[in-house]
Image (cartoon, rainbow, N blue to C red):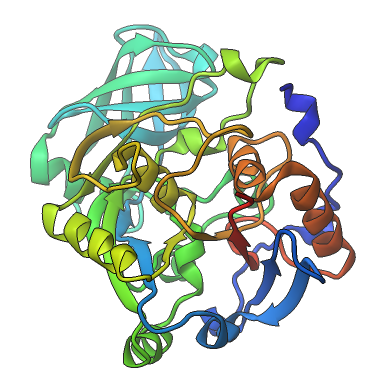
Length: 359
């Protein structure tokens, strides 16, 4: 297939710049392959009516770091302001990042990052460019390591809002809470698992009380999730790898629930990709602790997931390709056209849809 097959027109007015308040006040489009009608408009809280005892919500408990940094590069008396989005941790003191403007950086350049939002932090955080890649990617070796580096990044950085939001407004204090799930636990993501943003503690408690289990996995979402597909042929696209983990206890609980007739609901494409990476050919989920660069496109045979809850995605993106593989491209084109026409809010802070697999 070709990238053009996954294109569609989206009005700028459909892009949500802030989330619904409260979180679960968003809308939910239920997509039902093979049923009449195939689309159902619901409030998000209708998950209490759709899900049933024995089902399992699989939630990604990664925690977003303040990965957007601004600093200065000085060379031969010339000072340039450099914006950096960290996207992959390589070691205790080393990160891959997307820099802008990367053309102003050379190997060996030092970027000095300022005091940021926490002015109590003393001293500078310096990062040296040790590699330059394509698309503005650089490797930075910092002068701090381990916990000291984590604290310095948190103090100086801002929430790494996706480009379609950050280009329209600057991140602020409100995003520190809004762009984090209520169950975020393990630090390491540079983008939020946004389907999880719709859940409140109260809604999760109600679901638990009615017998819907909640199991947590971890996939540290990278900024590569927003990168466009630059090849015309999908087979030539290379996904950025992301680190994920499913514990033995979680894998056993998921397999037991499915054996007992429960449905596995992946909350977000991140949970989906991790579950499918860990599943064997019979659909049994194995413990997993590794990187995954799985690229799911139409024709993929799903093994582990029965339903997918996700937000509305960018045209021509790997995520729209994934949902099209799950529920069928014609139906997802119909669903997105309906969502645009009826005022659903798109992307990270937007509304959600609940998809069933078109098996």
